Length: 376
Image (cartoon, rainbow, N blue to C red):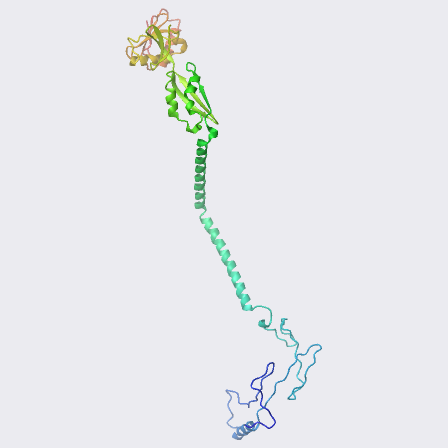
Protein backbone atom coordinates (compact mmCIF):
# COMPACT_ATOMS: atom_id res chain seq x y z
CA UNK A 1 0.00 0.00 0.00
CA UNK A 2 1.30 3.39 -0.94
CA UNK A 3 1.83 6.14 1.63
CA UNK A 4 -0.36 9.19 1.03
CA UNK A 5 1.51 12.19 -0.19
CA UNK A 6 2.70 14.69 2.42
CA UNK A 7 2.95 12.12 5.20
CA UNK A 8 6.42 11.49 6.61
CA UNK A 9 7.33 8.12 8.10
CA UNK A 10 7.46 7.90 11.91
CA UNK A 11 10.78 7.50 13.67
CA UNK A 12 12.30 4.04 14.06
CA UNK A 13 11.28 3.75 17.68
CA UNK A 14 9.02 5.64 20.00
CA UNK A 15 10.77 8.49 21.79
CA UNK A 16 11.00 8.60 25.56
CA UNK A 17 7.79 9.51 27.34
CA UNK A 18 5.81 9.11 24.08
CA UNK A 19 3.18 6.62 23.04
CA UNK A 20 3.72 4.18 20.14
CA UNK A 21 1.67 4.21 16.96
CA UNK A 22 -1.62 2.40 17.23
CA UNK A 23 -2.82 0.63 14.10
CA UNK A 24 -6.45 -0.14 13.51
CA UNK A 25 -7.18 -3.71 12.59
CA UNK A 26 -10.26 -4.97 10.82
CA UNK A 27 -12.87 -6.55 12.94
CA UNK A 28 -13.08 -10.27 12.76
CA UNK A 29 -15.77 -12.51 14.12
CA UNK A 30 -15.13 -13.70 17.63
CA UNK A 31 -13.69 -17.14 17.93
CA UNK A 32 -16.27 -19.82 18.37
CA UNK A 33 -18.99 -17.81 16.55
CA UNK A 34 -20.35 -19.24 13.34
CA UNK A 35 -21.34 -17.21 10.41
CA UNK A 36 -24.91 -17.57 9.56
CA UNK A 37 -25.50 -19.79 6.64
CA UNK A 38 -28.16 -17.43 5.41
CA UNK A 39 -25.83 -14.43 5.38
CA UNK A 40 -24.96 -13.48 1.85
CA UNK A 41 -21.44 -13.86 0.68
CA UNK A 42 -21.61 -10.36 -0.77
CA UNK A 43 -21.51 -8.92 2.73
CA UNK A 44 -18.15 -10.55 3.41
CA UNK A 45 -16.85 -9.40 0.13
CA UNK A 46 -17.98 -5.86 0.80
CA UNK A 47 -16.33 -5.84 4.20
CA UNK A 48 -13.09 -7.17 2.72
CA UNK A 49 -13.14 -4.53 0.03
CA UNK A 50 -13.78 -1.82 2.52
CA UNK A 51 -10.88 -2.90 4.75
CA UNK A 52 -8.56 -2.98 1.81
CA UNK A 53 -9.56 0.49 0.64
CA UNK A 54 -8.98 2.18 4.01
CA UNK A 55 -5.41 3.33 4.44
CA UNK A 56 -3.40 2.65 7.62
CA UNK A 57 -4.04 5.11 10.42
CA UNK A 58 -0.90 6.80 11.49
CA UNK A 59 -0.72 8.64 14.78
CA UNK A 60 1.95 10.77 16.26
CA UNK A 61 3.03 10.91 19.91
CA UNK A 62 1.25 13.32 22.17
CA UNK A 63 3.04 15.21 24.88
CA UNK A 64 1.36 14.72 28.23
CA UNK A 65 2.11 17.26 30.90
CA UNK A 66 0.91 16.63 34.50
CA UNK A 67 -1.57 19.19 35.71
CA UNK A 68 -0.71 20.81 39.02
CA UNK A 69 -2.13 23.59 41.03
CA UNK A 70 -0.39 26.27 38.91
CA UNK A 71 0.94 24.36 35.89
CA UNK A 72 -0.49 24.78 32.39
CA UNK A 73 -1.87 21.97 30.22
CA UNK A 74 -1.28 21.50 26.54
CA UNK A 75 -4.54 20.94 24.74
CA UNK A 76 -3.21 20.08 21.40
CA UNK A 77 -0.45 18.40 19.50
CA UNK A 78 1.09 18.41 16.12
CA UNK A 79 -1.55 16.07 14.89
CA UNK A 80 -4.37 18.31 16.04
CA UNK A 81 -5.66 16.20 18.94
CA UNK A 82 -7.07 18.27 21.77
CA UNK A 83 -9.45 18.10 24.68
CA UNK A 84 -7.64 15.32 26.61
CA UNK A 85 -8.53 15.18 30.29
CA UNK A 86 -5.83 16.39 32.68
CA UNK A 87 -3.78 13.73 34.47
CA UNK A 88 -3.73 13.67 38.23
CA UNK A 89 -0.64 14.85 40.03
CA UNK A 90 0.78 11.66 41.57
CA UNK A 91 3.77 11.79 43.89
CA UNK A 92 6.07 8.76 43.74
CA UNK A 93 6.99 9.16 47.40
CA UNK A 94 3.47 8.98 48.82
CA UNK A 95 1.66 5.65 49.10
CA UNK A 96 -1.74 5.51 47.56
CA UNK A 97 -4.68 4.37 49.61
CA UNK A 98 -7.36 1.93 48.70
CA UNK A 99 -9.72 2.58 45.88
CA UNK A 100 -12.24 5.34 46.65
CA UNK A 101 -15.47 6.32 45.15
CA UNK A 102 -13.56 8.50 42.68
CA UNK A 103 -12.16 5.38 40.96
CA UNK A 104 -8.54 5.61 42.25
CA UNK A 105 -6.70 2.27 42.72
CA UNK A 106 -4.00 1.54 45.39
CA UNK A 107 -0.41 2.11 44.40
CA UNK A 108 1.64 -1.11 43.84
CA UNK A 109 4.09 -1.98 46.65
CA UNK A 110 7.10 -1.53 44.39
CA UNK A 111 6.10 2.17 43.91
CA UNK A 112 6.09 2.75 47.67
CA UNK A 113 8.76 2.66 50.33
CA UNK A 114 7.34 -0.49 51.86
CA UNK A 115 9.00 -3.87 51.44
CA UNK A 116 7.55 -6.76 49.60
CA UNK A 117 4.60 -8.20 51.57
CA UNK A 118 5.83 -11.69 50.83
CA UNK A 119 9.20 -10.78 52.34
CA UNK A 120 7.48 -9.35 55.41
CA UNK A 121 5.40 -12.48 55.75
CA UNK A 122 8.51 -14.65 55.41
CA UNK A 123 10.33 -12.63 58.11
CA UNK A 124 7.35 -12.91 60.44
CA UNK A 125 7.18 -16.64 59.78
CA UNK A 126 10.88 -16.99 60.57
CA UNK A 127 10.42 -15.06 63.83
CA UNK A 128 7.48 -17.26 64.80
CA UNK A 129 9.49 -20.37 63.94
CA UNK A 130 12.45 -19.18 66.01
CA UNK A 131 10.14 -18.37 68.93
CA UNK A 132 8.53 -21.80 68.71
CA UNK A 133 11.96 -23.43 68.55
CA UNK A 134 13.05 -21.59 71.71
CA UNK A 135 9.88 -22.67 73.50
CA UNK A 136 10.47 -26.25 72.40
CA UNK A 137 14.07 -26.22 73.65
CA UNK A 138 13.02 -24.67 76.96
CA UNK A 139 10.38 -27.36 77.42
CA UNK A 140 12.84 -30.12 76.55
CA UNK A 141 15.40 -28.77 79.02
CA UNK A 142 12.74 -28.59 81.75
CA UNK A 143 11.69 -32.17 81.06
CA UNK A 144 15.31 -33.33 81.05
CA UNK A 145 15.90 -31.65 84.40
CA UNK A 146 12.77 -33.23 85.83
CA UNK A 147 13.70 -36.74 84.73
CA UNK A 148 17.35 -36.40 85.84
CA UNK A 149 16.66 -34.83 89.25
CA UNK A 150 17.56 -38.02 91.17
CA UNK A 151 20.79 -38.47 89.20
CA UNK A 152 21.79 -34.87 89.73
CA UNK A 153 20.99 -35.19 93.45
CA UNK A 154 23.25 -38.22 93.77
CA UNK A 155 25.96 -36.47 91.80
CA UNK A 156 25.61 -33.43 94.06
CA UNK A 157 25.99 -35.62 97.15
CA UNK A 158 29.06 -37.31 95.70
CA UNK A 159 30.60 -33.97 94.86
CA UNK A 160 29.87 -32.63 98.35
CA UNK A 161 31.40 -35.75 99.88
CA UNK A 162 34.50 -35.43 97.74
CA UNK A 163 34.77 -31.75 98.54
CA UNK A 164 34.45 -32.49 102.27
CA UNK A 165 37.09 -35.21 102.08
CA UNK A 166 39.43 -32.94 100.14
CA UNK A 167 38.88 -30.16 102.67
CA UNK A 168 39.57 -32.55 105.54
CA UNK A 169 42.77 -33.79 103.93
CA UNK A 170 43.86 -30.22 103.30
CA UNK A 171 43.13 -29.30 106.91
CA UNK A 172 45.10 -32.30 108.20
CA UNK A 173 48.04 -31.47 105.97
CA UNK A 174 48.04 -27.83 107.04
CA UNK A 175 47.73 -28.87 110.67
CA UNK A 176 50.48 -31.46 110.42
CA UNK A 177 53.02 -29.19 108.80
CA UNK A 178 52.02 -25.87 110.30
CA UNK A 179 54.73 -24.35 112.55
CA UNK A 180 52.00 -22.71 114.61
CA UNK A 181 51.17 -26.12 116.16
CA UNK A 182 54.73 -27.14 117.00
CA UNK A 183 55.61 -28.59 120.44
CA UNK A 184 57.01 -25.91 122.73
CA UNK A 185 56.02 -27.26 126.16
CA UNK A 186 56.17 -30.79 127.66
CA UNK A 187 54.08 -31.45 130.78
CA UNK A 188 54.50 -34.59 132.96
CA UNK A 189 51.58 -35.68 135.16
CA UNK A 190 51.26 -38.51 137.76
CA UNK A 191 54.89 -38.55 138.86
CA UNK A 192 55.66 -39.04 142.56
CA UNK A 193 58.71 -41.32 142.75
CA UNK A 194 59.80 -40.43 139.23
CA UNK A 195 61.51 -37.08 138.64
CA UNK A 196 59.20 -35.11 136.32
CA UNK A 197 62.00 -32.78 135.24
CA UNK A 198 64.11 -35.74 134.17
CA UNK A 199 61.20 -37.08 132.11
CA UNK A 200 60.76 -33.71 130.38
CA UNK A 201 64.47 -33.53 129.64
CA UNK A 202 64.37 -37.00 128.12
CA UNK A 203 61.64 -35.85 125.71
CA UNK A 204 63.36 -32.67 124.51
CA UNK A 205 63.95 -34.23 121.10
CA UNK A 206 60.23 -33.72 120.39
CA UNK A 207 60.37 -29.94 120.80
CA UNK A 208 59.79 -28.00 117.60
CA UNK A 209 57.82 -30.77 115.90
CA UNK A 210 54.15 -30.37 114.95
CA UNK A 211 51.83 -32.07 117.41
CA UNK A 212 50.59 -34.47 114.74
CA UNK A 213 54.16 -35.51 113.84
CA UNK A 214 55.38 -36.44 117.32
CA UNK A 215 57.45 -39.64 117.08
CA UNK A 216 55.88 -41.97 119.65
CA UNK A 217 58.55 -44.58 119.02
CA UNK A 218 61.19 -42.18 120.29
CA UNK A 219 58.92 -41.26 123.23
CA UNK A 220 58.67 -44.94 124.19
CA UNK A 221 62.42 -45.42 123.99
CA UNK A 222 63.02 -42.35 126.15
CA UNK A 223 60.54 -43.41 128.86
CA UNK A 224 61.86 -47.00 128.91
CA UNK A 225 64.92 -45.73 130.74
CA UNK A 226 62.74 -45.04 133.80
CA UNK A 227 62.04 -48.40 135.55
CA UNK A 228 59.44 -46.87 137.88
CA UNK A 229 57.13 -45.96 134.98
CA UNK A 230 54.70 -48.80 134.45
CA UNK A 231 52.69 -47.18 131.65
CA UNK A 232 52.11 -43.78 130.12
CA UNK A 233 49.66 -41.90 127.92
CA UNK A 234 50.43 -38.91 125.68
CA UNK A 235 48.02 -36.10 124.87
CA UNK A 236 48.38 -33.19 122.45
CA UNK A 237 46.98 -29.91 123.70
CA UNK A 238 46.89 -27.32 120.95
CA UNK A 239 48.49 -25.13 120.15
CA UNK A 240 51.92 -26.17 121.48
CA UNK A 241 51.73 -28.49 124.54
CA UNK A 242 52.54 -32.21 124.78
CA UNK A 243 51.17 -33.86 127.96
CA UNK A 244 52.60 -37.15 129.26
CA UNK A 245 50.55 -38.97 131.93
CA UNK A 246 52.57 -41.72 133.59
CA UNK A 247 51.51 -44.54 135.89
CA UNK A 248 54.23 -45.47 138.31
CA UNK A 249 54.90 -48.98 139.50
CA UNK A 250 53.24 -49.94 142.78
CA UNK A 251 55.40 -51.89 145.21
CA UNK A 252 53.63 -54.83 146.86
CA UNK A 253 56.29 -56.76 148.82
CA UNK A 254 59.64 -56.26 150.46
CA UNK A 255 62.60 -58.40 149.55
CA UNK A 256 65.63 -58.68 151.80
CA UNK A 257 68.89 -58.80 149.85
CA UNK A 258 72.50 -57.98 150.72
CA UNK A 259 71.66 -56.34 154.05
CA UNK A 260 69.08 -53.99 152.48
CA UNK A 261 65.44 -54.08 151.64
CA UNK A 262 63.98 -53.56 148.18
CA UNK A 263 60.38 -52.69 147.38
CA UNK A 264 59.27 -54.87 144.49
CA UNK A 265 56.08 -54.55 142.39
CA UNK A 266 53.94 -57.39 141.00
CA UNK A 267 56.24 -57.78 137.98
CA UNK A 268 59.32 -58.22 140.19
CA UNK A 269 60.76 -54.81 139.34
CA UNK A 270 62.58 -53.08 142.18
CA UNK A 271 60.83 -49.81 142.80
CA UNK A 272 62.90 -48.54 145.68
CA UNK A 273 65.77 -49.71 147.88
CA UNK A 274 66.02 -48.74 151.57
CA UNK A 275 68.49 -49.70 154.26
CA UNK A 276 65.63 -50.50 156.65
CA UNK A 277 62.41 -52.36 156.06
CA UNK A 278 59.61 -50.05 154.85
CA UNK A 279 56.40 -50.17 156.90
CA UNK A 280 53.18 -51.26 155.29
CA UNK A 281 54.67 -53.85 152.93
CA UNK A 282 54.84 -57.62 153.77
CA UNK A 283 58.12 -59.42 153.35
CA UNK A 284 58.52 -62.48 151.15
CA UNK A 285 61.14 -65.19 151.32
CA UNK A 286 62.60 -65.27 147.82
CA UNK A 287 64.44 -68.47 148.69
CA UNK A 288 61.14 -70.33 148.92
CA UNK A 289 59.35 -68.14 146.43
CA UNK A 290 61.67 -66.74 143.73
CA UNK A 291 60.68 -63.51 142.06
CA UNK A 292 60.41 -65.12 138.64
CA UNK A 293 58.25 -68.04 139.87
CA UNK A 294 54.48 -68.45 139.29
CA UNK A 295 53.98 -68.47 143.05
CA UNK A 296 55.41 -64.95 143.30
CA UNK A 297 52.98 -63.77 140.60
CA UNK A 298 50.01 -65.40 142.46
CA UNK A 299 51.08 -63.82 145.78
CA UNK A 300 51.40 -60.42 144.11
CA UNK A 301 47.84 -60.68 142.68
CA UNK A 302 46.49 -61.52 146.15
CA UNK A 303 48.25 -58.54 147.74
CA UNK A 304 46.91 -56.20 145.05
CA UNK A 305 43.35 -57.34 145.82
CA UNK A 306 43.64 -56.32 149.49
CA UNK A 307 42.66 -52.91 150.76
CA UNK A 308 45.52 -50.62 151.91
CA UNK A 309 44.25 -50.87 155.56
CA UNK A 310 44.29 -54.67 155.55
CA UNK A 311 47.57 -54.81 153.60
CA UNK A 312 49.24 -52.82 156.39
CA UNK A 313 48.35 -55.68 158.86
CA UNK A 314 50.08 -58.39 156.75
CA UNK A 315 53.59 -59.16 157.99
CA UNK A 316 54.71 -61.80 155.48
CA UNK A 317 53.52 -63.78 152.47
CA UNK A 318 54.55 -67.08 150.99
CA UNK A 319 53.56 -69.04 147.89
CA UNK A 320 55.57 -72.17 147.11
CA UNK A 321 52.98 -72.92 144.39
CA UNK A 322 50.33 -70.76 142.72
CA UNK A 323 47.57 -72.61 144.66
CA UNK A 324 49.16 -72.35 148.11
CA UNK A 325 49.31 -68.65 148.93
CA UNK A 326 49.60 -68.06 152.70
CA UNK A 327 49.49 -64.78 154.63
CA UNK A 328 50.73 -64.13 158.19
CA UNK A 329 49.31 -61.14 160.07
CA UNK A 330 51.27 -58.95 162.40
CA UNK A 331 49.40 -60.45 165.44
CA UNK A 332 50.52 -63.96 164.45
CA UNK A 333 47.27 -65.18 162.85
CA UNK A 334 47.70 -67.30 159.72
CA UNK A 335 45.45 -67.08 156.61
CA UNK A 336 45.24 -69.89 154.08
CA UNK A 337 44.32 -68.12 150.86
CA UNK A 338 44.76 -70.81 148.26
CA UNK A 339 44.91 -69.60 144.62
CA UNK A 340 44.59 -66.07 143.40
CA UNK A 341 41.12 -66.74 141.96
CA UNK A 342 38.17 -64.87 143.56
CA UNK A 343 40.61 -62.76 145.55
CA UNK A 344 38.13 -59.87 145.91
CA UNK A 345 35.43 -62.19 147.32
CA UNK A 346 37.88 -63.86 149.69
CA UNK A 347 39.05 -60.47 150.96
CA UNK A 348 35.47 -59.44 151.86
CA UNK A 349 34.75 -62.73 153.62
CA UNK A 350 38.02 -62.53 155.56
CA UNK A 351 37.32 -58.97 156.69
CA UNK A 352 33.89 -60.04 158.00
CA UNK A 353 35.30 -63.00 159.86
CA UNK A 354 38.05 -60.95 161.53
CA UNK A 355 35.63 -58.27 162.67
CA UNK A 356 33.11 -60.82 164.04
CA UNK A 357 33.38 -60.89 167.85
CA UNK A 358 31.53 -64.18 168.00
CA UNK A 359 34.62 -65.97 166.69
CA UNK A 360 37.23 -65.55 169.46
CA UNK A 361 40.73 -66.97 169.76
CA UNK A 362 41.20 -67.78 166.07
CA UNK A 363 44.71 -68.68 165.02
CA UNK A 364 44.03 -69.58 161.39
CA UNK A 365 41.47 -68.51 158.75
CA UNK A 366 40.96 -70.74 155.72
CA UNK A 367 39.24 -68.96 152.79
CA UNK A 368 40.59 -71.16 150.04
CA UNK A 369 36.93 -72.13 149.47
CA UNK A 370 35.01 -68.85 149.89
CA UNK A 371 31.65 -70.71 149.93
CA UNK A 372 32.74 -72.61 153.05
CA UNK A 373 35.34 -70.61 155.08
CA UNK A 374 36.97 -72.38 158.05
CA UNK A 375 38.55 -71.02 161.22
CA UNK A 376 40.93 -72.81 163.58
